[in-house]
Image (cartoon, rainbow, N blue to C red; front, side, top):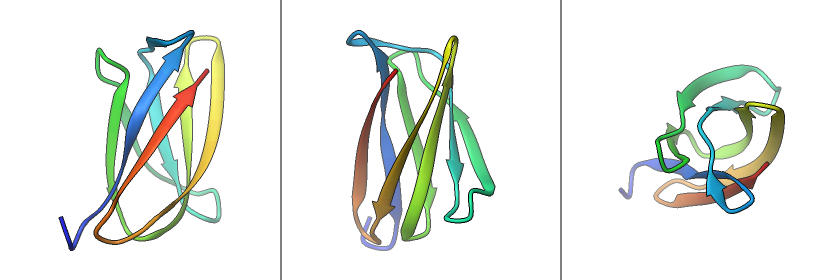
Length: 81
């Protein structure tokens, strides 16, 4: 893991997992990647170190979270919609 930068977390509504998608946007707001959430609301990206925006797209809501990821670390993000 020392060479990887991982951004991961979960998407919930009222404490329950939500099915949807999470997008990874670079510092300029450009689309980089998108993954579906798992049945437990989990998601994971492998990215370069730096500032990123996570955009959760779920039925009835869109929520953005800005994170700063470091090389060799896991950045945990909880997104409540």
